[in-house]
Each structure stands twice: as structure tokens, then as C-alpha cells.
Length: 229
Length: 162
Image 1 (tube, rainbow over the protein chains, first blue to last red):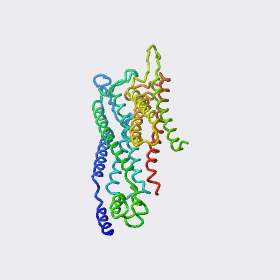
Image 2: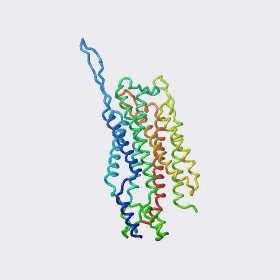
Image 3: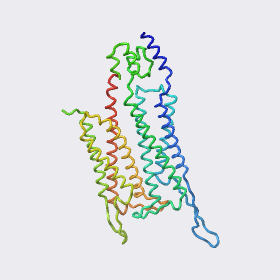
Image 4: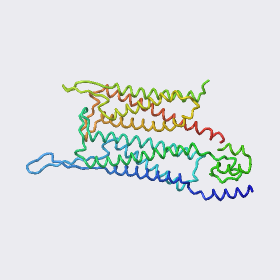
């Protein structure tokens, strides 16, 4: 009777279909990747050139062309770098979710994912807020410091910057949700016991809690199994 | 009497509370008046929304830090504190980043946008803002250490078997 239960369990767990919660996390990561990648690309390609007539010599006007590029402002440079790193992080996490289920380092896989997620949230929040306040300065100027607004001259530059900011904030909110979910996974999922794995009764990586309840019904070593959950 | 782990956590939280309080006070009391070639100017922290955001964000975190100092060790609210720590770290980073972006423009100017640096005329204001930013950084690093400490404490029972 015990052997039958073990066979039933092995068949049930060897298929390893991702549970509904994993699809939610994967979809969120995909959306966050698109959002941060869009922010990086839109701000990275943000450039506007304006030519104005500076003086007239005789009949030929002398034109000067001024460009507004994102590299002129350190805040926007930080924004592009932060969002670029965030999209790389999201891509790596998606790949690890899809193809690297077995990758683990001393059982610290979930902890590493949670900490990396937190670091990326911090980075993106810093970049997004710096760029947001710099954009506000460019749009409204600052009368106290005698800084004029530049958005009336470079309208397309400001519009594209605004779009990139919106995408980055959307990505930030998504990544905050993902980070919270990663931390919850870290705190709730129990660690499989090494002793059990060495006996060969459980395939590695299986959630030991489920296995316990089946064996518990047969009355096998109640106290020992219960401790793991 | 008090466990060393609890003492360390309490000490770190006190340092973080003190740092955010210092950041708020330094930024809020930074104002300078002067004349520059018969043009009178006044620099206050309310001139820029970035500095206002910095003061508001650090004030919120100060109140939160003060409340958490009095939380008894065994209560289940510590799980909520773990989540709130992450949210407030994000708030702190965002406020420091915004204030630093504007402060950098104030110090170095932006020649392409015809924005002149302001720090030469209002040195005391600039120094106080720099001090507030440094205090903000210290608070941020302390909160990050506290977050990692909290996660490690929650995970400890699971690591004991290994």
C-alpha cells in the first residue's frame, strides 16, 4: 500500500507543470521587460535639432543648429542606464524561469532572485524619479534660479521624454509587485530536507510538504515529517 | 537581558531614524538671502519641487521609523514591517535621486540650456543641501542593512537544518 502511494506521487510530480502562480509571475516579468525596454529605447533615441537664424550678413542668413540630446543631462543618462540594466535583469529572470528551473547554488536560488529583484527596483526608482524631476524643471523652469524652460523650444524632445517616463513608471510598479511576490515565495516555500533526498524517496526539488500529507495518512513517522512544514 | 540581535536591530533603527530626522531638519532650515549686484535673491528649499519631495519623503520615513522603534519583539506585525521597509527604501531612493539631480544642476549648471550654476551665490544653502543629502544616504544604507537583516531573521529557522 505504501509503494502504491509512492508511485502515485512520483507520477504526479514528475510532470512538473508550472502552477498558475508561476504563469502570473512570468507574465508580469514579460510586461516589466517590455516597459523598461521601451523606456530605454525611447529615451536613448531622444534627440531634436533646431536651426535658428542667428544673424544676417548681407542677404545670406547665418544659421546655427542646436540639438537637444539626452546625454546633455546626467539625470537622463542615469535614467537610460538604470532602465537598460532593469530590462537586462528582467530578460535574465525570464530565461531563468523558462529554461533554468534546475539551476541552484547551495539552495539560495530564491534568496538570490528576491535580492536581485529588490536591487533592480531600487535602481529603477532612482532613475525614474531623477528623470521625472529634471523633466519637470525643463518644462516649468525655475524663476528663483533664473532657469528658463526649454520645452516650448524643443517640444518633440519633451514629448518623447514624457513617454519614456510613463513607460518607466509603469515598469517600476510592475517590478515592485514582482519583487513583493519573490519575497513572499522566499518566505513561504519550505526548504526540502537533505536527509529525505538522500534516501531516494523524493525526487529532488519536490515540495516536501505535499509528500508529507500523503505519508502521514498511512501513519508513517508522523512527528518527523510534520517538522518540515 | 536584551538579546544582542535585538539590540543590534534597535540600534540600526535608531540610527536610521536619526539620519532621516537630520535630513529633514537640514533641508527644511536651509535658506539664504543675499544681494548680487543690486539684485536681491533668496534661496529656500521650497523653490524646487524636488527638495520639497525630499523633505516630505524623509518626514514620512522619520515617523515610520519612530513608530517601529516601539514595536515589541514577538508581535506578528514584524512581517508587515518587512514589506514596509522595502516600500520606504524605494521612497528614500527616489527622493535622494530627485534632490541630487536638481542639486547637480544647481552646482554645475547646464550650459546647453543656458542654466547658470547657482551655488556660487548661495554657498551656505548649497552646503546645507549637501549635508541633507549625505544624511539621506546614511539613512538609505541603514534601511537596506535592516531589510537584509529582517529577511535573514525570517529565513533562519529554515536554514537551521542545513
